[in-house]
Length: 139
Length: 143
Image 1: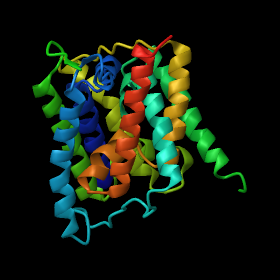
Image 2: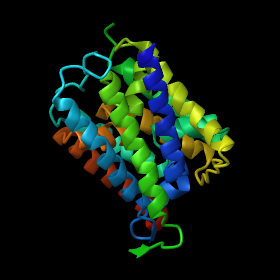
Image 3: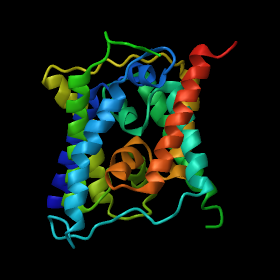
């Protein structure tokens, strides 16, 4: 129960951060990705602020065996820098560049009632499902 | 490169970024989970990692955000230039690519960099480069 409350609050704070920072506005994201055009550096500051505030949390956690709720940490898998990482990141980057939307903002847009956001979300879920299906063909 | 001083919002960017970072720290310190949206979403959809509860709770919070924002008189007014076919194509690429690459701007960008992960740094550099190149071609590429 406490875990669910923490997760809910974290999601809410995250989503509000996306809105306040302007990252839920695709035009603002695209303006950052438009290096040779009229360039809006805002996203760089969003990243700096985000990493800056997240880092102490992760550093603090290194000294702990358990989370604040006494649970274990679930770090990501220890794969190296492989072709999947690079190719996947290229594909993601292209999609991000095309619409100025990534997963978090996509969900915010959907909930805010954006039709375009809904189209993107549906396609995003399809894309996730496609990858999942392809990598689980033998099962 | 010309800086768009009119639309540059340093204060809001830093504040919003701080909120995002704090949320990531909260999720990690609190329940030991990475605040990577693509991972949380696909994990909820495909139930591989278990613990559906916290995933649904996080996603619920994320989806509640625009409602809370509207109550606080900070409405979301997104400007989407892409056509629906392009949105569909982009969404497919983002969905497929984030799963293949194991993360997105939140998972690799915020959490990965905050954890000093070399993998995440490689991912961030790569998707940023791809994003820059794509927008360049879209807006300034030769027809």
